[in-house]
Image (cartoon, one colour):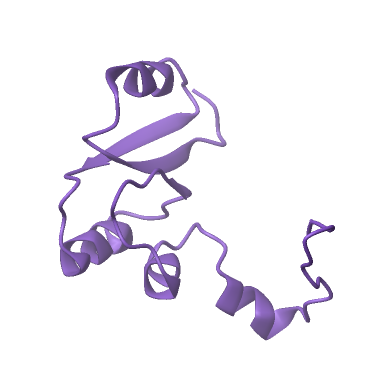
Length: 96
């Protein structure tokens, strides 16, 4: 088993093909959640049992509060507190 295993929250409404792809990966742990989960329940899921490293979302709200509750995710608020932003978006450029 890989040491860099990542935890991914995934709505149960995702297509079977997507779940099959994720099941083939030994570096991903899938954490399913119902598509109509309430915000308090979703935040509790994000805080439970260690880091969440990624999220596949449908209609589920995912803002700064959720990013902060998912300990393994990068959030704009936490990054701006330590690193000044030098990226200015315009239609012709992309931030990296």
